[in-house]
Image (cartoon, rainbow, N blue to C red):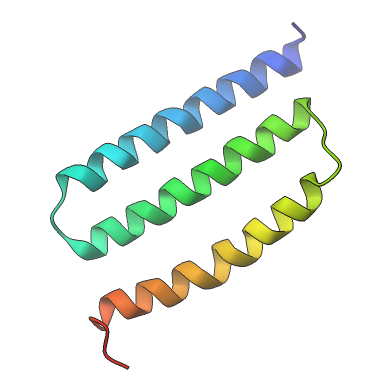
Amino acid sequence: MTAFEIVTTVGICMFALSLLSALVLILRTKDFLTRAVLSDMVFYSMIAIYLIWVLNNPTSIAFEIALLAAVLGGVLPTLSMARIISKGRR
């Protein structure tokens, strides 16, 4: 194992721990706004784990998946957060 692989493995483990802690907090909290923020954290940590994994395992569509995740990660959470804050009112 090279030093770069060790660093990426540690990074993946750290993001996995943050993902698991966010999932536990989602299950324990009753506030819907907090759950929405934590669900964004889960989504972004899954994207980060994938992007770190791609550094060691190149795929032919890695860039497209990252671009799609960036578009979906920027637009959809903002819209869903606005709906949650306004309690579904338009």
